[in-house]
Every structure is written in structure tokens, then in C-alpha cells.
Image (tube, rainbow, N blue to C red; front, side, top):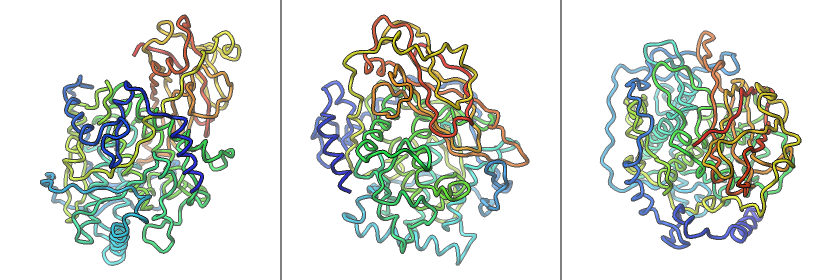
Length: 562
């Protein structure tokens, strides 16, 4: 891992501690407390108190929250319009209890997975034994909802639309909306408690894959031991350790990129996913209520359509039809690394809620808070849970091991001088001559601003339709001097759109095949970084297809007031 260590040295020299104004955003996850100009975990958590006084979001009071499905009505999942020879349906129970979070004593501490083999030998042994016993249930009692396959099927059923919304024939999905974070938090919560129950250790905590930190930017070694119950053969063999994770991963034959550049791009991606967020829905995902069709991927939040999707694709085996296991929703839960991956996704939610930015972190809409799901708990009882009860991980009895969060310092360096629009607009066209566009090639568009210079604006890429059968990804840049920009650790990079193949339902009901959505990118800070001219009334937006662009259509692009 010498390359990663050298990258760490580079990062510490080229990205120095931020100014006093920037330091208020730092979350110190190391045991060094307040060292380095940051705030410790206690300060971060105290910061949560102020979030509940923030402006409420989406107070439409429709009183139509998503309700648990009828688990007796469970169909065959599909991928690419083809029914899978897979039964994702769980055991059926008529007894459903409303779950009440138990009193919290000592918090379970979820450790960083890359540290287990050296620093937490006892925890690793417990983890392997718990998963071994979970796998054993597949043979001794296949209908035990705590078994390994049954737990994997939970994700398949909810995420590949084997269920309909209660009382309708509209498929239910927990991706591409504000349900993404709370549903997965509950899923991991019960998975973790089941593992603890199987080894009679209520303090057991699920490790997280720390892929947002250079020291954790490889598949943790605990998952690469072929004799371990944590191993899964259905992974990309080119991405075994010490291969460095690519949080901008696009395809299986990428152009060569050195580790140092990968690490820099990864940290830049995380900064923009986490810090350049305008409102809660930009991070969490947009609203999804009873009666809505399955949300299109453009309604996903920044992490879901960014680093989350890239890890899924990076780990899955490209030799399998649908990149199983981790590369497709229906099979992702079959890989033990999935749960540690999503534990870090969950950690991103925890960190984001603690960031002292001006963005409200709470969603008060009752349709969000009262959305409900069904899970089997560690006692094999079917329980009903609410999204609103999953907002605070500490109330659920767990927290995360302190580790550094270097991407907080990774705002791109400011350009010494801005570009001249007349120089870079020669290859750009007006929107009316470009859209609607099938993204089979790079598009450079000259877009009018709402006000000159570094105005408080958002870029909106409108009416995106992505083929649900394909992995799709594109990146967006503003005022790039390059016609074909590659890196994301520069000031011009605005953000990304990515999605895994995702099609489900029954009887050909694929409502999201027709669904279109829009994504927004905050521009205020980007304008400052690119040193935009105070008189500029237009910018050049470059949309770069990274994977299967021919399967994406974009209806338009515009800049609006924030």
C-alpha cells in the first residue's frame, strides 16, 4: 500500500488546513479531539440541535406516506425486462408489531473495516463467526428470516420492485428518493442486531468500509480471505487489494490512472457530494409518496448517485450478466462487503447532519417522517418501523469509530484567473440547438445566467431519461477550457449523475421506464473557485458521457436563481 501512503503525504502538503472560516465545517473523527482546528464528535452532535430550528422542508402535508407492502403479495423481480430465476420473497407472518427502539446504554461502536485485521482481532473473529452462523441457517432452516440468503433477499425484494405499494399495482422502490437513507439504516440496524444475537453479543457492531479516506480506499482485507465467510467470489478480480477504489468508476476498461490521481479525484468527489448541497433533498433525494410512480434515478441524492453507485459497480463482477453480486440491486446483499459499504453510506448521512453549514439538515414533511417499512428483527418477529425514528443513529444505539475525514479540506484550489467566455465558447452551442439530446457525444452548451458574475445560482439539467437496463454515468463541468475534461479535482467540475441497472415489477409494469427527472448543481462556490469574471452573463457547460451515454436523453439545461 505504499502508493496510498505517498498519496497521504501529497495530500497533507498540497491541501493545507483551511482558513478559520473554513474550519468550522471540519469534523474531527480521530482520537485527537480538537486537534487540527476541527470540532470533536461532541461538538458535531451538539450542532444537530440547531438543525431542528431550521426552515422546514417540503411542508406539503399531503398525509400520503409510503406504507409497508403486503408481504403476501410478492412477485418475481426483473432486470432488463427479463424475469429472474430468483425468489426474493420473505417468509410470511400475520403478526406485525410496531417497533419501539430499546433503551440505549453503552453505544455500539462501528469500527473501520480496514483496521480490523491489525487493531481489532477479537472483533474480526466475532464478525466472521456471526456471518458463519448466519450462512449456516441457510442449510438448517432456510425459512429463518435471519439467514444469510433471507437477509440478502430483503434488498432484492424492496429494491427490484418485487413489492407493490400497499393497495395498488404500482411497484414500490426505496431507491432514488428520500427513502434511500432511512430504509437502508433500518436494514443495517436489524442485520447488525441479528449478527449480535447469533453470537450472543449485544455489543457487536458492523464494520464500515472507509472508502472516503485514502487509508480505506481499497476493498478491506477482511473480505479478501477466500477461507473466510466474508468472502464472495462474485467480485471484479482486477479490484482485489491493493487496487485503489475509483469513486468515479465508469466501466470495466478504463484508461490507466495512477493511484495518486485516483485518491485526489476520490477526495474531490466526496467534497462536492457532501459540501455543495443546497437543500436537504439535494442530499437525501427528492420526495416520494403513496401513489407516486417509481422515482427516476435523477431524483436520487448526491451520495446515492455518486460514490454509492460507483462502489457497487467497482466491486461487482463484470463477467456476470448483471455484474453480480454487488453490481446489481437484486444480488448486492449476497456479498458481505455490501453491508460494510452501506454502513459507510450511512456514516455519510451522520456526518452530513453534523456539518455546520447553512443548509437545513432536517425534513419535516410528515410524508417523509411517517413512511413505514417491514423488517424481521433478531427475534424473528416481523416489525413495522418509521423513517422518522431513524434520524439519529445514537438513539438507535450505535456510533462510528473516529477516523479522519480528509475530504472536508478538499475544496478545489481557486483559479488564478478566470477564462474568457469568448475564448471557450467557440465550440459551444445555444441550448435550443442542442436539446433534446441523446448523450452519445460530449455536449458543450452556452447557457445564460440569471445575473452577472458569482451569483447565487443553480445549474439544472432537465428531463433526464436513462435506460433502466443499463449502467449510466455522465459528468458536468462549467467553464472548462478543455473540450474533453477528465479529472474531477479541478474547480470546473460541478458534479455527476450515475445509476445502476434497475428494473423491476410485475406484468411489464415498469413505470420508471418513462420517468424523467432533473438534477441540480449548486454554482455559487464553483463560481468563486473558477474566478468567474464579474461581468460574465453566460457560462459554457460541458456534459461528458462516461458510461453508456447513448442510453441517456436530456431534455434541456438552464441556470436558475438559488
